[in-house]
Image (cartoon, rainbow, N blue to C red; front, side, top):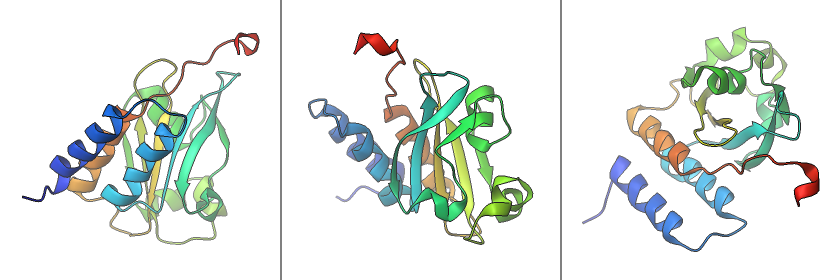
Amino acid sequence: MRRTGAGRAEHVLATLMAAPASSDRLRRVLEQALVLAGASFAGVYAPGDDPAVLCLAESVGLPGSLYGLRDGYPADGGAPVAEAHRTGRPLWLGPREVAARAEGRRTPAPDFSLAALPLAGPGGGSLLAVAERPEGFDAGERAALELIVRAVAVPEPGPADSH
């Protein structure tokens, strides 16, 4: 019997997480946003050496620059990744909401939707996913992204001399 929707996402993510830890685990988990949620871009933004800035830790899919995305955002700013990080609540933005924000006005790609979901755990951060569909992510895709967020492990930032 073939699994669909959230059941499939749970199975795939459980399989990934059961494998021995590796340096590419975050990338492999993020790739599931492309496969299971139909995202064209997915990235994890986390506090870097300066916790006042959320930095792109990993991304998959099309270049974020197509959507006006940057490699870093002020944690106290108005960018969706910062809002999700601060509030602990996901943001689901359609093309109109994206266009109304400063970041949306500097993008070459029209009519895309954006999801920003907060990450739990040390340091926190956000998952940012883009769908090249005006209607955005449907309920099943949102459920898959929420499962992916739970599988993302962001390393706790430490002092530079601890490496």
